[in-house]
Length: 166
Length: 276
Image 1: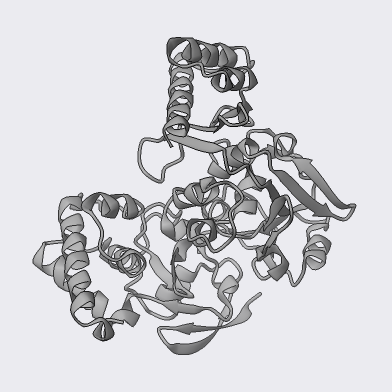
Image 2 (image 1 turned 90 degrees about the horizontal axis):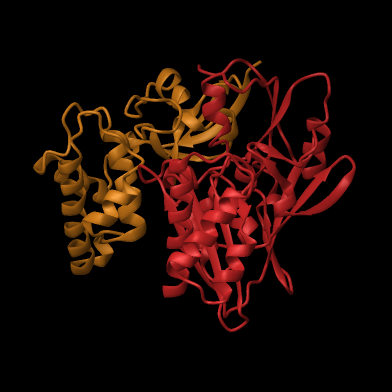
């Protein structure tokens, strides 16, 4: 039996009818065609389905859509005009932080949340914090370099013009 | 869709949840944070006919300061401890534990009560609440009862929870401010389930100590003889031998490598407590 769920996705209100067993990831991808959220392991290990639920990073594959009634969801599509995400994407581009790109949506959202919460970080801190995101191209060195570069430039931008980056 | 079909009920209160969980005609499971249950549903390893979602019960998400203890609602997330959004009764041990469970995206959803009720031997909170001498508040159709953490955990994935009963809260006594803690976790990869985990509590002012070894093949082991040796100031080879001996005589079936891991984990936790 389908149940109606109201939620905000990337700032837009949605009302959808879902089966209890439908994951948030499947709702986003299959029903709403928001395909930036990727699905790898579907058991919470690989991190490529990482999104924000009420401002906190979470696994879309380990969240039942029906439990998100009233929630505010943000997927990579919802970061198009975000300043920090711009810095991260730029860094991933310059430092070759992606190869096939499958893990990239999760890498970007996890690192966005990390930099928002923690600011400037050491390489070791980034490695520990990003351990929940797998890259099967094994491009970890460049991913860490990208996030480190974004962390440094974001910290400098925040120091130069704090109002512009908030 | 990965899981098999099931019926869903969003519980509005603790009473409502218990009412729906006590339905003998179907296989009912409570849903807390879902970070262990959802993978099991996705893999179709955990059968369920009806899921009772506890996620909207506000009473389960509160932390209350009491005179000698803090009452942590079962639905508080690991991230709530990590971010220190709840008061701390443990001189920083609980915020630390909350900060190193799995990954941030799991910590924002996974809950202390969910973790303890599953009683995975590798669960961080399980060893932690046993080390802190916490109590577990259970509630069901028969009413409320309170069990010491060590009596709540019976074995691997086995607890004192009766069918239809849920964890309401975890009562953690305020640890003395003179107490120091040390922790050591052995895992192949950050965020992975641990192979061994030890917590040492040391109070040189009161001459007391506590040592708990987790990720054993059952409930966390409280090593009382070793704790006495620690409190008496023992170290080095004699302490290592005491820990090893106590692990062997615990009756658990440790392989030589696992025994070695637990010994090393305990010794490093003690070292961390002494140097903190």
